[in-house]
Image (cartoon, rainbow, N blue to C red; front, side, top):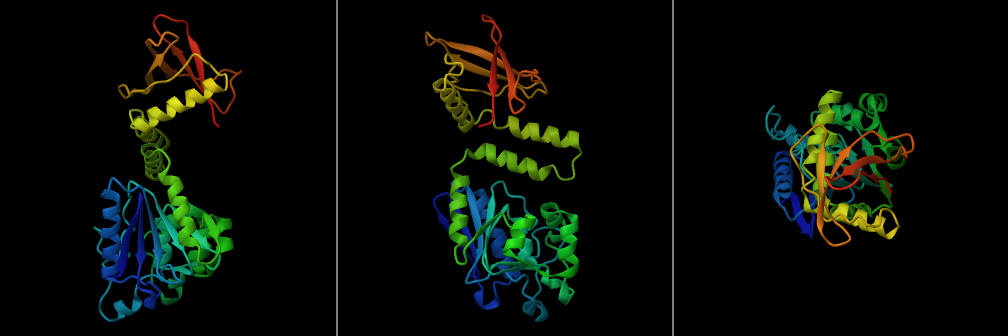
Length: 321
């Protein structure tokens, strides 16, 4: 097998296993990568995937030797990309664990991932420039979005190598680690992500990708739709309860304990019903309506004015930790 697919708890680890070819991707390997990520995305028990390469190389790009022998990667307009998953937008995050070379199509695979953990000996670059091979797996799109157009053009036009330190400085790498530790550090990062409330994280992630190509109004509306989809999620309800319990412990609005929040009809004015338990343990309903902050409110807070039919208006502040 040219791609190893392994699971560890909530994690999936996909390894390009062609070290003798510096993990270059031929047609079969590309298909195996695409199928592997579809398998990961469809598995409800998995939260985060890691993509890495066997040996001391992440991926040297497409297998030019195979192409020269008449076995090219697929280049159809529809379906999977030449390197496999590069046309997919998964519902869950993927982390690249990069040791050694991540160049040409290998760079494009790393760019496709949400985060990139790079060993200090990692090398990124558009090395296909010297062979006249184009970027057709999203490199000319994702690289400018990640590091800015000017820096991206420097890499795209020159094909020069970029070391790990520079990659971190320009935003190409998101974490650095010692050589040989990329997979372990990526695993630790993946476990951190897997421990977070998943529905909320995934909706915010998708909104951040989908906003490209949208106007501001469309992007804001799309963000709201993703956010409203979270409001009925049990992890959201538990998070709100933990928030208020901590505020109660800290002496903020001590009589208020959030028990659950449920989503109402999608409405631009965005009201949320919050049943509360009062002093007599009677469930009371409070409607939270987003309003503009007053001059006395901290600029980092979102102000929610809360009132029920039988009590005076009260103000609840949702602040940043």
